[in-house]
Image 1: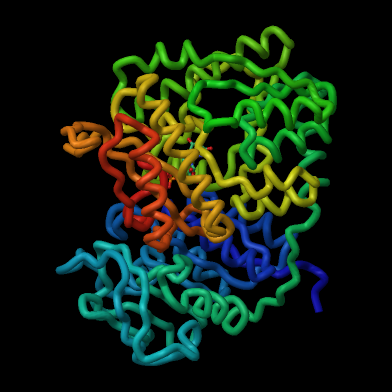
Image 2 (image 1 turned 60 degrees about the vertical axis):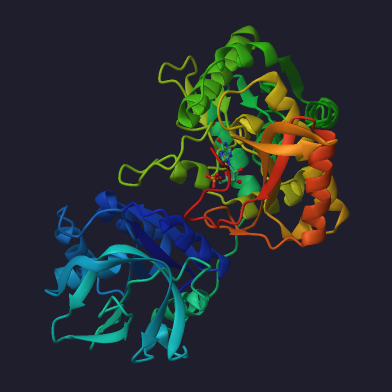
Length: 516
Ligand code: XMP
């Protein structure tokens, strides 16, 4: 038996979920790496030296199979003779390259769909006749050549799953990696363990050790500065960097004025006593000034990102830092369109919001390949305080992306108070550990109310609470009405300017978690 670790390669055609597939596979303790389709050959050769590559997954993607010449790439993959699973766009590619008919669907399928399993073979072994699956496509496979079998169909999609008659090649039009596909995990397990014959012989490994080594190498003996917000990502990155370069590190906490109530004090208290160089900057006025009159969400994100970097640069110059360390994680990069072919959803404050003219020699991102739950595991290993490990994620631009429209001191006050109320009530009701995030959004909508027998015309606050595993997809949480009632009563009582509270019942997708 080979001493090498078994691995599955996910070929990334730029779909939003390529990384989710990789994540799911790693959860099964099988190593997985994402390879951009345009650097396929080199990457695969390199991976095969280190790992026993047992199968290939072709991810979804925003393109149509006819738009780009990917045929050659897919043929190269076929030539490897390994088991293949095509998902969504990958499924269409297999059909297209093999001579099947793929064209724009008469009716686009988007969201949960019922698939009829005609032949429960291979990837679909052990599934029910009818399965809830999650679809998101505009092209459809209408027919396959004779060497392929149709395994499943839906009302609008005649070839929703396919299999080569002799070779271990499968295609699924739906997304098994998205939790809305009820038996998606079983489908992926079938492919990885039954079809590819993988052994579950990979552990997350000694991430801390490797990462410390990498930070040392990348910083080349120079001073570094880290953006510390007190959130889990930047805290873990700070702890790793502190381990790697000790006093060469300066952690900077910028109070932009959009932190939650009590947060700046908490960060100062926690990190101030950790024995690292720690600087706290009060930049509230300058952020507010730059955001005056700005209403566009992307513009807000860009301005905050730019101002943030400027503050860092000022401090970096003072301390003589050459490198900037950041707590950027996988989903941040995906959603900022870091792959050429993936669609940009929103500019994440700590990634694409950076100005191009940087004064640093480079940026070091030790957590760039991790998902949030993996970052939490690293935090546990680093023995960071539970208050940080268990903290809900908080966006870099803070409450600024939870105020729609122009940001004013009055609105900041409302959203801060409302956010504290949501946190207090959710924590009091014992729901905290079930939820990924829970917060308040101050919307621009004003509505009529009645307060103390008089007409009031005030703001509408929206409550958002979601369950999620890694923020790529999320479900709105089914919070008991009594808890919502307490939140609503307190928000309208404790904020004179608020006349209405609504609850956001949208999943991600189609919505995102934050409102902006
Ligand atoms: P969305 O709103 O895109 O958010 O569904 C996914 C997750 O990312 C967080 N988020 C951010 N995190 N910088 C960050 O570090 C940002 O600019 C940013 N924007 C959103 C969000 O809270 C959720 O957990």
